Image (cartoon, rainbow, N blue to C red):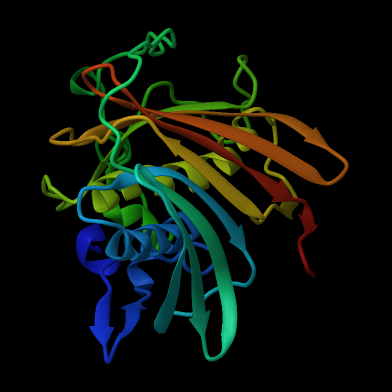
Length: 273
């Protein structure tokens, strides 16, 4: 089991920022949301101390390796209330990810929330995957990092009548409340990256004979989770055309706050062999 706060941390070595991608986050290589979280935390190091993340846009350029990765960080706009920061993650001279992060220190402005939290059961009344399937064999190491509770369970090969939708409560194992807004918000990136493919599969009546790696990821941060442990992931992948699958995800706190929203495009790739 990995600890998110430790496995996304960066260290300064002679003025250069490095992190080590941990195998605890393996799922077809290092999980893309996990690697994006490293990039977001790198931007947080460069941002002014009173800033928080507003937006991140990520391009996945290559599959990372479980080894050291260097973060090259460049603030490209330094405004009074907003900074734009470019981040590149590089391994062995090869760029594996590039991201653009907007940060802000704004606290005033309009306050309006018309979006409604899905009317789903609270996590306290649901069973976890481990409680439902105590004898299940561990899958990818990635899934050992969470306590997960599905809102609605459907066996593999049974299409959800709602379509390509997935709703789950997730809690990061061993994660403690933090005053670092970049670390706090980074949790949402892992969910936004991971669940479009899962949601797409929920709408199918058979296991797909192809994969769909994520090309990009965009997330907008509305509020920091704070002391909230459990996050509701409301994902849907309701458009698939011409080799692309699009998914969108909303992240909610257990006290009803919209924390983040985002999405990605996935590329259809036939399985080899």
